[in-house]
Image (cartoon, rainbow, N blue to C red; front, side):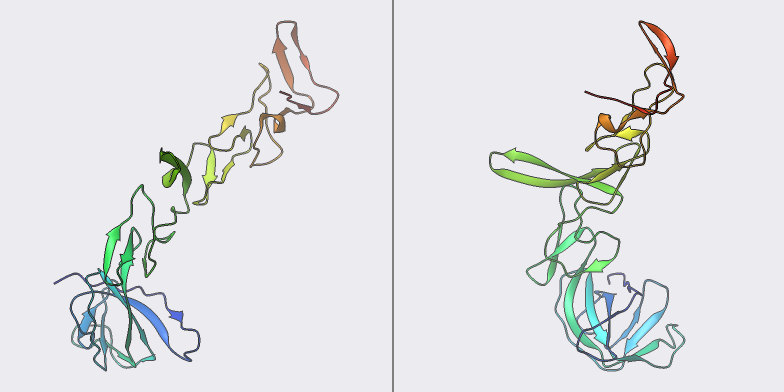
Length: 221
């Protein structure tokens, strides 16, 4: 028997007053039995409902939760249960309406851990960077990779370099001119021209050394 899981977060269904949705581990063909959830509690639908899935999860709706203390002998009683869909985990997508296919290139079907009914893998985790590569002429493939050093990522192709760094796909440290480290006004600089030595900063070069007294000194290409 497959291990059962329950997504505790509830989502209210549009147009169905008082109804909520949840995900259960797929352990058979009917949800009218006592079922353990991933939180260690047990649940039982007061009505039976048949389904046919080869996926790891199913998605159901229910209209209320009655008596019970969440144990195997006294499960939480759910009323008005209805089958909605077969469902998959975060790193696979729903294929053919009944089974799950593994995502490739570290892509995921949703940006967070959990269950879903999406039919493609379009996302990276919110802490990863998305990039593209061309395995063949006219073919573009997305992939997910670790966020570059000194940057924050949001699961898209955009990265935000930390203050004092710049870049669009990786982050380089601002030049120092041999003295006071270069910096930026804030995080998110894209080009070296956003780097500067602050007023009062020092520099060292072939002509000697000195101090920038006239104001912030920005770099130029």
